[in-house]
Structure formats: structure tokens, C-alpha cells
Amino acid sequence: MTKEVTISQIQTKIIKLPNRPEAMLAQDLAELYGVTTRVLNQAMKRNSERFPEDFMFQATEIERDLLISQNVMSKKSQTALPFLFTQMGANQLSSILKSKIAVQRSIQVMRAFSEMERKLQLPDFTNPAEAAIAWANEYKEKEKALIERDEAIKTKAWISSTREASTMGKLSGATRRLKRLEKESEEKEKTRHTFLELDEIPWLDDFFDINDNEVRYEIVHQLVAQGAAMNLSRLLVNNLSYHNQYAYNTKVIAAFRKRLENNPSFMEDFKIDKYTEIL
Image 1 (cartoon, rainbow, N blue to C red):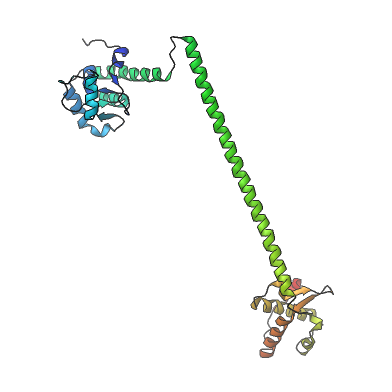
Image 2 (image 1 turned 180 degrees about the vertical axis):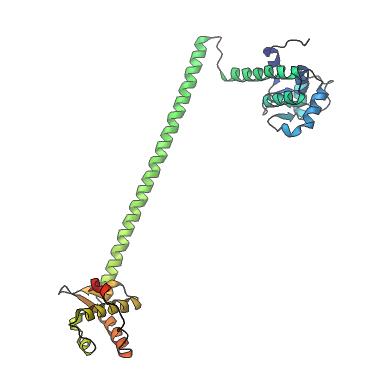
């Protein structure tokens, strides 16, 4: 018949080393699970892949000496560096030992670890007044932290939106200034050019019947195409004159005439109907 063990008794075996998680010595777990320390360690080593660092760790020499100095383990009983198992490691051990007592005791071990963790987190309820004050203070700290976090999020969002609005405003302003400068530049450039309406071009009658609307459409299209070939902006190709009629750049007109003289038949096959809107 196995000896009954209470959760309080198990808790006295749970160790907290500096910078280590709470754990139990292999020898104490072996006693609880009804096996020898040697058998328990061998089972762990055969299944080492099931025991990562947060399940099990081996004490250093300094940690071993600390445990001996605190009478947690005797110097005679332990010459090698001992293994220690965390809550998850202790539970894993019970699954590989496959004994009924190990399964039963592992449940008690889990409860012992959980109870100890809860005690570390909760205030001491032996004094209700102190407990109430502790909970109130903790609640206030949490509430304060949440308020500060929310304010920080709002401030960050406000700064972000302000910066974005400022950036968009700067971009919009820069775009407007750029367009204005481009327009001013084109206006200045335009003053360096002269423009003539179709009816003001004296030599057109030598090539075309300019009273024919279809012919006029064709000429307009060819002038616009000629200006594009010369890399001139539309503003420098044709503009409304003081007669509210389109006038065309004399440089474009001269290039167009040269082209006609070199090849007077190049307009014969051109389709006119879709260019009426540019007159």
C-alpha cells in the first residue's frame, strides 16, 4: 500500500532557483512516482526528445552547492549534477513511466504547482482588509496602465493623421506651385512664338482648297501631328487667337510646308472624319 501524500507536502519539494522556473528534483519525483532515481533518469534519457529546456534542466555546480547548503539535498546522496523537472516535465515523466501510481501522483504534482503559482500571484487573504487594499491597488495600477496605453494609442494615431494631413497638404501645395510654374513657363515660351490662323497662311491656296471643310480638318490634323513630332506642347502648337479661332505656330507651319514640297501627295489617303473636334 502506497503512503498518502498531500499537496502541501509536495509543495515543500518544489524548488525555485535564481533565474530558473519552479521545479522538482529527480530524486523527489522518483520517490513520489514509486521508482528509483536511476530508473527515472534512464527513462528521461531514453525519451530526451520529449523533454525540452522548459520541461527539464540540469543544475550547475553552483546550483548544486546552493541546494546542498540549504539542505534541500545531502552532499553524500548527490555527487553528479542533479536533474530538475518543471511542472510540464513532471507531467511528461508520468506518461513515460506508465505506472498507475505515477499517473495518480502526477495529478497531485500538477495541483501543487498550480496552487503555489496562484499563491504567488494573489494577496494574503488571512487579513481581509489588507487583501482588499492589495486588490484595489492592483486594480488601480492596471486601470492606470490601460488608460495610459489607450492615450498613447490615441496620441500616436493623432500624430500619424496630423503628419499625413500635413504631408498631403505639402504635396498638394507643391503640386499647385509646380503646375503654376509650368503654366508660367509655357506662357513665357509662347511669347517667343508667332501664330497664324489657317486663313492667314498665304501659301495654303497653292496646295489645297481651304474652303472645303474636310480639307481644313485634314490640314489641322497634320499641323497638330507635325507639332507633336517637333516635341512641342499642345499650347505651343495651337492657341485661340483674338478672333476666337485656332491659330498655329509658324514654326510648325513652316515644317509642314517643307514636308508638302518634298511629298505633296502624303495626305491623300488620310481619314478625316474622326478629327473634326480639333478644329
